Structures are given as structure tokens and as C-alpha cells.
Length: 394
Image (tube, rainbow, N blue to C red):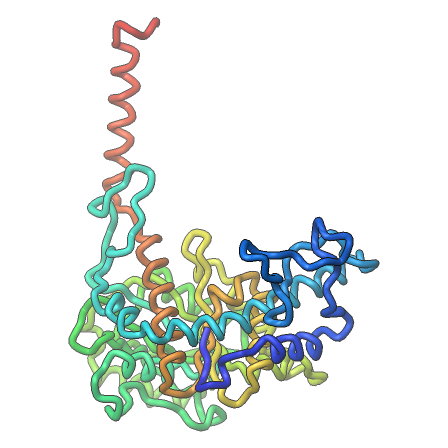
């Protein structure tokens, strides 16, 4: 989701124009709707013509034309996704009037608040953390630290407060964050926190090792993240700083959900690049996203697309559709467009992203170790009792 200023509102004619430019091989002239072979327009309950020039109807039609190849249907599906993303910007803009109500739901959150009771389990049967931990990961220059600052400001009264996370303004110089940093949201709360991390490496094996460590053993504020590929001099300096910080005294937190941040400009470049180096950006994102340790059961990470302020609205929609196809997730429900800006629509996109992340974190809380044994005992009693019942034949 996302959007900035009035450009987020897409009219029907603009939407048609964008679709024509994106998919010129597919005519936007609609076939005859089902049940109207005479070509007449359907009416609503008041006798007024439905559709007309107000908005293109992309529903199901009886006549789909001569195009029946799989590639044609793939293009139609992409066109539908592109349209849905454009409509999503409009919907977000309309809902932004309820921003305060949406923020209040996040501010009232506590770990386990949005757990769904299922399979006879209760909240007391789960290992509920004191603080829900959201791990923020992403390639170099994707804007992880900037996102942390943006999220923090959404829930602070002081919009001019200094940045909490250190932002690297030249991605070519180092990897920005070398030490894991914990940020409570809001500052005076313990309900949930964000963990800013070191940028992903260009080596998939390095990323897999780093992510597996965080997801299986947990994260700790101030923990140093070094790689075999780091220069020996850098390792020495960082280890010295780590000893001085005394991070070992901080609490280890298990990760409850993952926020994957990607640079929308880099994604767009990789979509149309002839250079193999630029193509590798999307490939690295897809490879990392598929790491099984990042998923909680069937729930994959949420995607945040940044740097949309450097792109047109149609390009931003194009990036979301591409990522949805690449990663196998919904471009409107699991991919959030969060450009720079402090307008209500962008703030609501941030709130929606947090709501999604926290709900899925609660939905996948680990079961306490004693619960399976307890359930097994109850099942055993039930089986023994059924055989001893006079109503059951041996």
C-alpha cells in the first residue's frame, strides 16, 4: 500500500491509460457482458445504466476473444493485478481519514492480543513473549533504518524528533548497521519492537547463515554482526567496540515476524536491465525471501517497498505487481508501498503494515513445551474411558 499526496488518487481514465501503456497487446475495449448478446448495457435497480464511462469493469465475460494461449491469460492476470494495485492506492487514500483510529489499534496492542483461538487451544497454552519482536531485513541501501525512523515518528507527537536509527546516506560506504539495534514502538512501550539489522550480503550462503542464526537462536540488542568476507582490520575494530558495549547483558528475544525491505528503484531497474549485475538484485531478493526460516508455518514475510518518491505512480504499481509474481504473494495485501513523505496515506500504509505483521506474529506464537504432553494425556484418558464405558462394545 502507500501513496503520496494527491497523485495517489487514480481516476478511471488515468487507470485505463496506465493499463494501455503497461499491456498494449490487450485491448481495454470490453467484450459483451454475460447475458447481453444484443450489446445492450445492463441496468441497475433504478433503471440506470451500469458502468458507462465511470469505470472500466474488469469482471468475468462470456466472450474473451481469440486470445486463448497461456501467455495471454498470464498477461490478463497481470493486468488485473495492476488494476487492483492502482485501486488500492485510491482505497488507501479514502481510508486515510480514519488514520487516528487505525493508529489507536496499534497503540492498544499487547503480545497475543490478536491471536486466533483454534484447535481447542487457549492463549495460556502459548509461549507469549513479553515483547513481540519484528525483524527488519533488506539489501544494502533499501532503507531499513529510515523505515524504523518513519515508523517511530508515526506514533510520536513530536514530528521533528531526531532520528533514532542511524541512516546511511551513501550505500557504497560500508554496510551501515553492524550491530543489531532494538527500537521499542512507541519509545515508552514494551508491546513490540523493531530490530534494525545489517544489510544482506550479495552471497546467498552468507545470508542464509546469518538469517538462520537470528531465526533459530534469537536476536540481542547491540549484538555484532560480522562476516568472513569482512576485512581483518574492520573485524578487529568492531570486536573492540562490541566488548566496550557489553551487549551480552541484554535480553535475547526470539523473532516473531519478519519485515523485508526492498528498494523500489533497484527493483524497477532489475526488471528491465540488460546488465547482469542489476538483474541480480531481484534474484537476490527472491532467493532470500524463499529461505524457509523466514516463514512462520505458511506465513511469509511482509514486503515494504521504499524510494517510491523517485518513481511515478504507474512504476510503483508495476514494481508491486512484479514482486507479487516473483515472490508468490499478493501485491495488494502483503506488499506495502512506503515512500518518503508524511502525508496521511503514507502513514496509514505504515500502520497497515504493522497491523499485518503483528497479527501474523500472534497467529504463529509457539506452543508451550508442556502443552503437547498435556494433550496426549487427555487423549489417552479419553480413549481409555471410551473402552471402559458400558455403552461401547469391546
